[in-house]
Figure 1 (cartoon, rainbow, N blue to C red):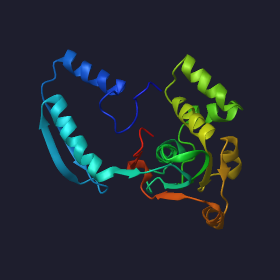
Figure 2 (figure 1 turned 135 degrees about the horizontal axis):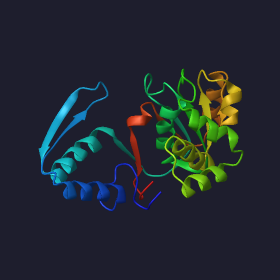
Figure 3 (figure 1 turned 180 degrees about the horizontal axis):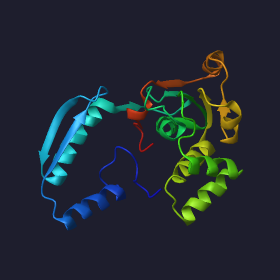
Figure 4 (figure 1 turned 45 degrees about the vertical axis):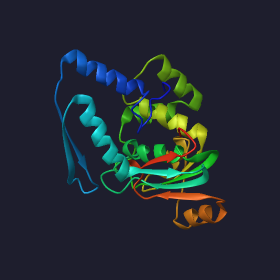
Length: 217
């Protein structure tokens, strides 16, 4: 939640700064990083100075996975990218996060993810179903961070920004308990598309970094 703590940002990112400080304190003087494509094949290898090698690798990653948009849109369709990225809702959330970066506040995000294993975390499930108010989830995790429950926090922030619809194999009633809208047939997606004034489709949303050219998303 700290300002600047966002994907794709190096300078002014407090998380990155903490990582670099920890590396200096530990005396790390060499790193070996690899950049992978969507088939998990090694594209480039970077070794050397802890900071310089990382930055060099990040530039290649940006060329491969960063896309830019001039403005937000009212509807974003995202796919987690198929198995195993959509094995459960816990993992598929990363696709929603990409959509939130470019959708208008109050807009629509449509997630296509099988989620054959359901929620993917019992703790996540408990937080999403026991708390009726999304603001309560956010308040509780801010008061005390709990690993696993943090995913409910991420969902809560995203659901307060946009309406999320899910086309999956999950129980529709369970999806509704998670404060989202189940899509029971593919034609429902077509209707959302027809009603959209502006739309973006991210078929590999978990590995795509959409960025607004006007500034930070």
